Image (tube, rainbow over all chains, first blue to last red; front, side, top):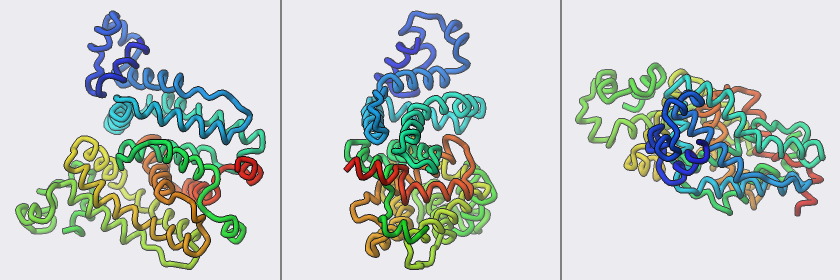
Length: 184
Length: 184
C-alpha cells in the first residue's frame, strides 16, 4: 500500500492522490485502507516518509560532517521529484487547516522525519565533531526550515550549490572567529 | 489604510481581514482600496510587512552579532501577536495556491521582508564580523525558515530560548573547531 501510494505521489500532484486512486492502483478495498490509516493525509504522509527514508539512508562514515552533507544532497534529490513540492506543501497546508491531522503530523510523523537527521548529529556529538552545547533541535528546525522555505515560499531551486551553502552554514555559522571570541 | 489593516490583522484571524472589513474600519471605499492594491492578499502582506518593519527596527550598534540577536528577539515578539501565525501561514498558503499572488509575493514583497536582515548581515561582513564567503541568502533562508517551521509545521513556541539557540546556530554553526579544521 505504501509502495503504491509512493508511486502515485511521484506521478501525480497532491490533490490527485486520493484513497480511490490508491485502491485502484493497489487492488485493495477502500475499507481495508481506512482500517490502517485514519485519513488520506496520514496515508500520504507515511508513504512519502517511507520513500524519503529509503532514499536518504546514509552509511555511517564516522564523520558526521560528511554524513550531514550526504544526507542533504540525497534529500535535495528527493525533493526534485515531480510530486514532492506539491506533496510537502499540501501536507503542511492540511495540517494548518485540520487540527486532528496536525496532532498526528506533529506527534508521530514529523518526529520520525526529524530522526534521520538527529541520528547523524547525535553521533557527531559523541565523537566530538559536533559541539556538545549546540541545540540540535533548533539546527534541525533551521535545516528543514531552509529547505521548506525554498520549496514553499521563495520557490528557489533546491540544488547542489544551495545544499553546499546550507551545510557550510549549519556547520560553521556565518560569523568570523574573531567576532565569536569578542562576543563571548 | 495600512494602519487600519495592520490593526485588523492584530485583532482578527487571516480569513476575517477582508476588503469589506478594511473599508468599514478605514472609511475608505472598496474601489479606492482596489485602485492601490490588486488583491486582498497584497494589501494584507503590505500591511503586515509595514507593521513588522516598524517593530523590528534595530539601531546599528556597530556589532552585527548583537544586532542580529536584537532583530530576532523583536521578530519573535511580533510573531506572538494574536493574528501573526494565522496571517503568515494564510499568506504562504495563498501564494502556493495562487500563481499571480505568488509572483507579487516573491518578486517584491518577500525581497522587502528579507532586506531588514540582509542590511544587518552585509554591514557585519564589511566590518569583518561576518565571514566574507558566508552565503547570506542561504543564512536568511535558514533563519526565516526555522521561524516559519515552528510557526507553520511544528507549532513549537517562538520564544527567547529558541531565538538564543537560533542566533548561536547562525553565528557559530554546530561543528567543533577541531572538526572544521579537519574538514578543510
